[in-house]
Each structure stands twice: as C-alpha cells, then as structure tokens.
Length: 157
Image 1 (spheres, rainbow, N blue to C red):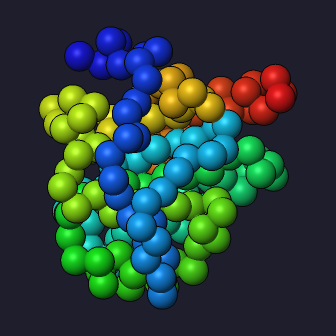
Image 2 (tube, rainbow, N blue to C red; image 1 turned 180 degrees about the vertical axis):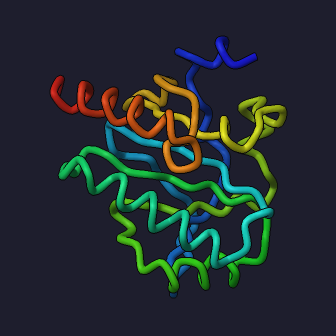
C-alpha cells in the first residue's frame, strides 16, 4: 500500500479555501518548490491542532529558506475552529498554510482514504510528486529522514 505512493503526483485541482486567523481566501495554490502536505482530520481538538501548526512552523524554520512550506489540509470541520487554532498558534502563513477541504476531495481525488493519520503526510516537489511518505511532526523517525531529504533538495536549488 505505502510503496506505490512514491513518485505519484498529488492532485490539488479541487477547490479549497485558505484559512487564516481572521480571513478566508477562496482558492489556494501551492507555489513553493518543496512542500510538506499533511491531512488533518477532525480528531484533533483546536488546541492540539494549534500545537501541530506550531510544530510545523518550527520544522520549516529549521531550513532558513523561502523555498519550503507546510500545508495542512483540514478535514471538514467548523471554520471557526480552524481560525481559533490559527489564532492560538500565531503561525506565519508563508511557512504554514491551512486549507479547508469542505468536501474531503483531497483524500478522495488522491485515493488516500485508507492511509493512517501518520502516513497521511507527504514531502512533495515543485511538480507535486511524492518524494517521501510520513509525517515528520507525528513520527519521530520521519523527522530526520525528511530533514535530510529537504536539505538535499535545497542544496540542488
């Protein structure tokens, strides 16, 4: 199940909204050449999601580069919960983007509904091709592995 994900291109053609603590932007675009995409389900309370967002920002900040971002795609839940989590986390939207997926199309369009939460995160390149599978915030072993891959990718730019 997991091995066939590598090298696959993720589909982001569905319509979502970028959520900020005080603003909702219709649509979103992944523009940075290195991105970690994580699906956040409704199991995380807003405070736990805020902690996750802080962890994502801290992780991206390790690289001191504008070429990397963390994108959290939120499972359908009240937008005010997402905004509350963002206000608690005070994350920089240029480093961590939260996208609201009201129809759960990210999982459906990419056939990802059977992956467990720890494996519902991907390191992708500028073409949205999967380089690594696994959440560097939730899985300790992925933290260093993902870090070394990102550093190699940055060295190539």
